[in-house]
Image 1 (tube, rainbow, N blue to C red):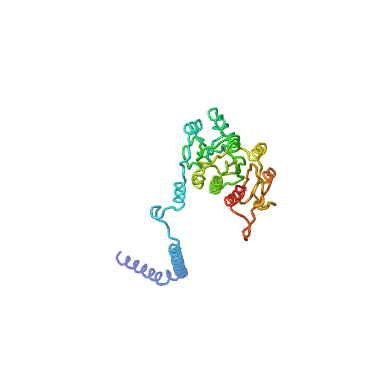
Image 2 (spheres, rainbow, N blue to C red; image 1 turned 90 degrees about the vertical axis):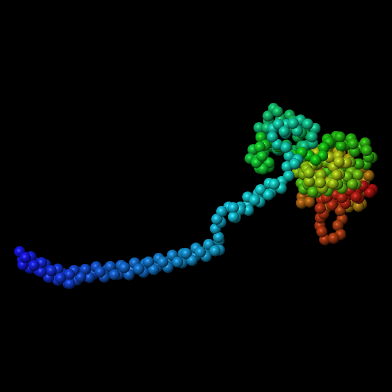
Length: 334
């Protein structure tokens, strides 16, 4: 058994050697070559991948250097939000009132009001309708806006659908202005503004009108700056000594002034008559238009005379407030 097993073992060993020396390797030569090729190919792939990673990393690092990421909002605050907050804080709401109860009490009092913003629900309500309609007939601008628009105007305040802006001076009716002018001067001068929306110009014109002893200023309800704090500041106290009338329609107001003996005079660069040669000594209404558009065509038709200021330099036009001051100087010196 022992010899046979050795023989068997030896035979098997010889066969195993033969197979191991020749058969196994010879049979798997192609496979090993394929494996070597695969390994070499995978190695090159890894090298390519590593190279790509290095390039990507380099690109990313260069981009990161050029465009650094913000780690936190604390380190790099949002400049836009800060700018919005600053603009909101800079806005002055000292002459604004909002909220149903506060606005209603203000409307019921004798305080002068420049402008009212309200939603359609507030305007048509039983509580506000009569008050708002009465103010509108007196020349106060009543503007119906949406809820979102009102929130924009008040910068997100709890407005309850209504807000108003107080006027810096009280206004009188056109009839009161006519009576006052005729009773205090034989040839009064009244200044009417047409489309002047810049409060600095309005304030400067009011200041010049009071300085040259005009009896009042007429401001239309729309297309004109109201009696805001800026107007009062630029007027430098002139509003305390000059009557201002706000009218719903300027052209209808000019018709009423004509009926009461006033001559309507408009200022325009295209006027055929120089203001220095104008010699009429009657009650006058001087109409001053905006710088860009001038006096509207319909208002020009209401004018009895269109006067111009002769300029000697190369400048073709004047600021509205400057033109008003020059014209009032000429007209009051007659």
